[in-house]
Amino acid sequence: MRSLLFFAAALGAAIPAAAAPLKVVATTEDVASLVREVGGDRVAVDAVARGYQDPHFVEPKPSFILLLNRAELLAVVGRELEIGWLPALVQQSRNPKIQPGAAGYLDVSQGARILDIPAGQITRAMGDVHPQGNPHYWLDPGNGRRMAQAVQKKLSELHPADAAYFASRYADFDRRLAEAEKRWDAAMAPYKGTKIVTYHRSWSNLVDRFGLDVIGFVEPRPGIPPSPAHTFTLMQEMKRAGVKVLLVEPYFDLKTPNSIARETGAKVVVLPPSVGGAPAAKDYIGLFDHLVALMAAALGGR
Ligand SMILES: [Zn+2]
Image 1: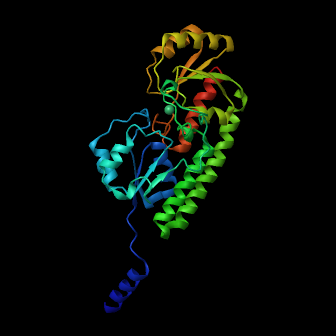
Image 2: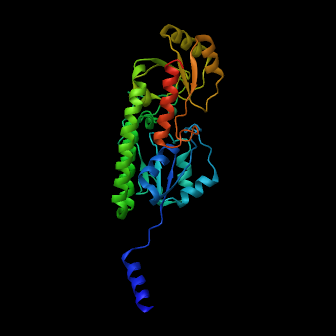
């Protein structure tokens, strides 16, 4: 009995009790998915914005402040995507660990390839234009890889004892993503150069990746609702260019897109730009599987 107790004590000393999972809050479900990919069971992740919501506009709730108050890491999309709602929540959380610049604050855009960086002066007349470029950059799988790398680096910094675990989880994600990219590139290859129109400027990285050509937006300027004059001009351009597909994010009113479709013969395709925006888009790779299937069907006239 005594030797057994001694053995148990020795074992206990040799194998330290597993550390509690790191509490992570991600601003969107896309970032949350990438943190889960890399962090596995060593992280407990909550997302603030739901995938079916417009990430520019999130209604603050007391539950978000509570989540942020307890967080050990806050991972953000950055590039001003969350500028309308996150700063006040972070301030109200009174959590010094996750304030911008603190060790528990991670902007996953740092290594990403960012498009639409405006040249020259930005004015209000330009609409919701972001000086740090297009904040919808996660819609390029190459950027998903770079975001996951940033997550791996930060998690290893916060929990060095698990660095090897995070490295192997990242390597596995990287391998699965590379396999999936081959499948997405093959499915989209026939549609290179196809002209499309989108509602908001959410798809710059996605269309760049797959070689589509966006000739216009339903919004006259980013974040500005459709106007009759702009819609009229857009329809003329769509008819001239033979545009057959109009991509709309799930949180916009379909009234204008539907009337544009009736007038031009284009098809309205509602595409979720985020994980959780549709049941099939349950994680980062699943999101692209879903997007590519919907886009290939629409562009192929199916
Ligand atoms: Zn936007």
